[in-house]
Length: 273
Image (cartoon, rainbow, N blue to C red; front, top):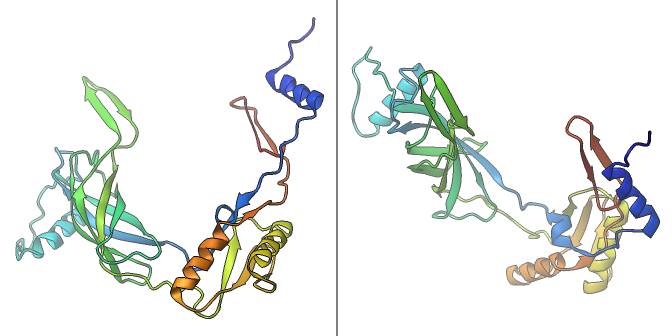
């Protein structure tokens, strides 16, 4: 009895028969790496979501303390020993990413995640929450109505849920209050960091930059970092770095790789195969 050839076997036979090979294609330097210092900063904050339809934390201690703190901003103080049942409120962690060159007044997207026993954040509103960086300074303020992508329903002991109801997003829900200083090439040099360490690719990037801007403009420090001499003046420096990002370079051929998942029956291969 003869077995039928699998799809993978037929594909490999076609490759061998036609001598197929992926042609080398040039890529922009912008797609292969980025300049050192152009990094984002993570922001986090603790907040309270209100307006839930009975799906909140239900008198958890940290939710109650958070609500007392929020009320104290408006001059309202709860009596000692009073811990209200907060089924319509939930304690949450708010996270955001502060892009480079962000200035006060710009808007950021934020993610709001429940940290207690809240069943759902759908329909909730985040109360004004400060977002802090790793240094403890406040860099943004967040507030707004949550958008929850999940959906759920329950009746007669049955329950159906799609995606998570305890995580939501607020597009443009935070306002930048403090900027992070970003200095590019002020010392006369700047480092270009490749996403993948490869001596061949680094050498080709150096050759492309020197051919465009003159000898000794760039030099490779190792297989990932390339040091580039920058001109004087902010305008000239920005135009110079933009021109470097637009240069085309043929990266080194990646190692051929085929990944076969026996559990799911899927086959993944890169363009070098």
